Length: 360
Picture (cartoon, rainbow, N blue to C red):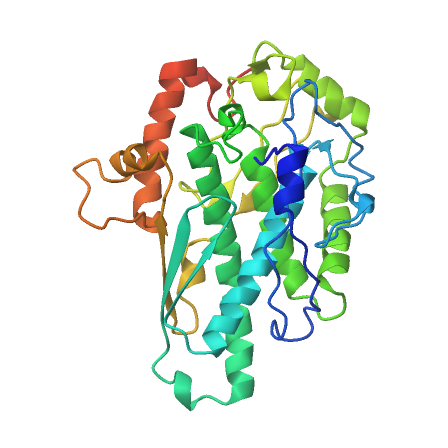
């Protein structure tokens, strides 16, 4: 979860233009998605609770019409709209980046998120790739790139949670540990990635408009609640899921470690004290799986070079038998062992009852 000081935001904020998904994802290399200030779903200073029926207009470039904040929906629990939008924009950015690389025949390329970590991509093309027409290449590359962009976004945003669990500090000033795997983070990201995949395939609307429509329609199907319900739901979990009054000093006890490793789905944490939602059932969303990297005869391999002060801890988690020379993190291989270690650490720190939505 990204929470930055105003000074840091002014120094690093970036914007970019939206691209019509009805056109090929070419000719405009977007700058990386801008920073959005998000907040915990806790009743603490700095949190803005807002109505789920008034999510505003999505804007890649930035707009006061976005109306970001923490919303609550009966089938989704708390959703951080800033996280949702950020995940969607990273999906669009990485899909376009991948599309351009595929059309150019690149066999390897790299990208970054906000942290120093470098993501390395290696591409093996279908045997008949060079015999295809330009039109057919564009069609296939567009399909593969959208799926790959969703996968890359999921991995990068999960990696951010892992880094902050190990106390990586983006600004170098205040800790982000309390935000690592907070109960609404991964679900909000997953929903944003899911909606971005739909928006990028829209043949009528540009990305911002398609995302705006997608958010409105999807939230409406989840049982949207007013800001007062969102806030009261959070208040009711004080002392159980968290404590503290100031967001960077929150003691976040409940950590949602569900990143879809078990069943390919991310489940929300519903708060049992919300009477308006007493009969609601949770709606899970799919995470982009490894099949996103092997479509239409492509084979795409992703590796992470951490490049952070926490390298030693990360490699110990990824390589429990010992780190080989020139090691990198390969998500499909190493995420299970890293997440297993984090789960053990959560249990040691807070107890097993604060995992997987059991903190009642």
